[in-house]
Length: 549
Image (cartoon, rainbow, N blue to C red; front, side, top):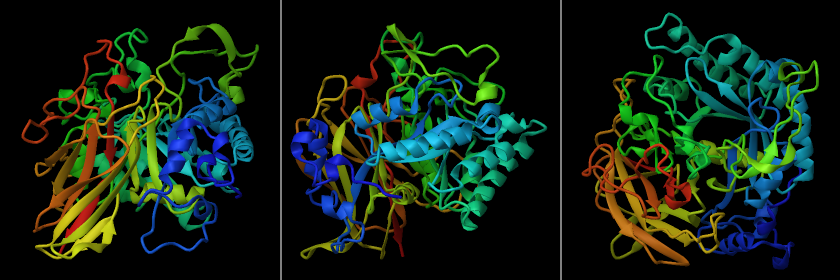
């Protein structure tokens, strides 16, 4: 499939044709450890330097259009807005339903996706599905482009979607729960078989808004990860619908539309604090020593992302139109195109790339490389364009001789002997371009989280990682441009992982597991208190693992 580099990465595109944001990204291409030269990105066969650099592409894996019954935008509306906000890759993930599968929606959508690829050669466009996971919440299914991408999605939803197969109930102890949970694992095995057989080149799954209803139990997360290697790779660390908290926009609004409480099918082991977001991030991710860390403590990848989940954007004047007589979503598989009105319409979402961004480190410019980067955990996320760029390298510290050449980056592993000293080197590119709130975000601090790797969980329902905590914080308020932070890791004795987190410093306090674990973590605002998401910005990275032998 022919693709062009993003305009900011293409040396043939003159600077005069780029926006201020694109110029800022182009400036990073020459920065140490942060990106290939434009020519190398355009030519994947170009010779690589000894230290393989990464180019960070911004994307969104959870987007809806008129092919979802609760959304309203056309493909062109979404792609145009996404490009305006700097998105390099985009996955359209419509809700599975009868209209999507049986009225031909999935195939009509595929035609539009193929058109979008032709019309937007500088954007990597994926087709996907928002899966109603049996006995659980939703999930993103993303398929690599190819002749069978739509057919795979249709077969998958007809056989394994909780909405279409009547297998959504996951009430603890319920008569159908075990069967439905098994169906979800069977679905992942089936996807792996389609990839192995060559029916599609690649496919991956991510759990969406995992704590929104409290129905994704720890044993289900582990079961999905373990069912088929490399298919279920992680979860949304922060959900979409971040605009739900904009002042005056939605009654009792909470970032992510996490406006629920415990219900009969919720997993009973979660505390009451789980049903909201913290700094806009899902409780599973935001709690140091919580669910995410419990997964990582097993020494295996379980990666996080962020996305828009755009259905209806805030401060937008487009409105849905009624169906013609005798027509419905079930018979057409899509909604009528929206029309522009004179007044703002309800909406809880930002556009792709406008607020939530997932940055993936790729070595080549193609769809499979983006999927490989997601599967490898080479990703970090931010809100509100908090950072312009970030690069993380873990290296051996050799006193008197400098740092060793062997290194690991996000999602990677470094194998060292007991007693080895390490240094985590973090290159930060401070933001210099205003975001859509009209302000240039300022990073205030960077936190280092360290957790012990203790092996497979003896109890699959365990959601705590007691050996994980914030071990260092570096204050960086007022620093601009590019700067390097170094976190020394003294002589190591056993295996562990490191991950990073930081914020603009405007709203933080003791974490949910105590100040000794997390002295200044993200907080949850009361429902409808008027706190703007633009005033509480965070970034998170995926971990780097250290295997001590």
